[in-house]
Amino acid sequence: MEAEKTYCLYCHKLLKGRSDKRYCNDECRNAFFNEKKKEEHSVMRDVELRLKKNRRILRDVLGEYHTKTTTEKLLLQKGFDFKYHTHHFTTRNADEYVFCFDYGYLAKEHGKIIVVKEIKNEE
Ligand SMILES: [Zn+2]
Image (cartoon, rainbow, N blue to C red):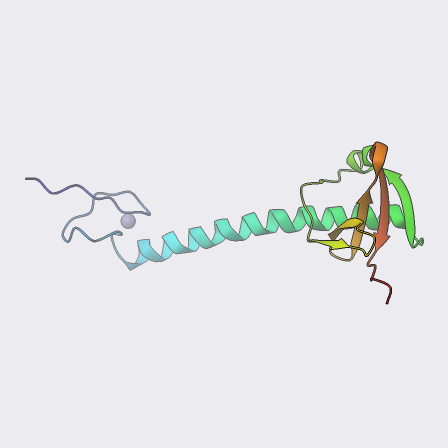
């Protein structure tokens, strides 16, 4: 029975010799891992950029205030992406704030949004 053909994971050339080989040589293996790492970095960078943009929008909306009421519509117009956030924070009265780093918001009824900067549970 003819052995199954295997191809280099990086350059896709037909591999000769041992059937457990996955790359032509070290160069192809290194190049393959470098590319994979680059892809992973670019995925993380994209998420980071969205998070930073969200934070910037919240910061700009809040200005010098401690809290400010705005609308979901206005945040969306500014390019806010509600899919991306860093963490949640639930207050003692069960309000669940969503944070992008140190800036957060609380979604209220009728598309109202309360923007805050890092809050703490009052002791
Ligand atoms: Zn190769």
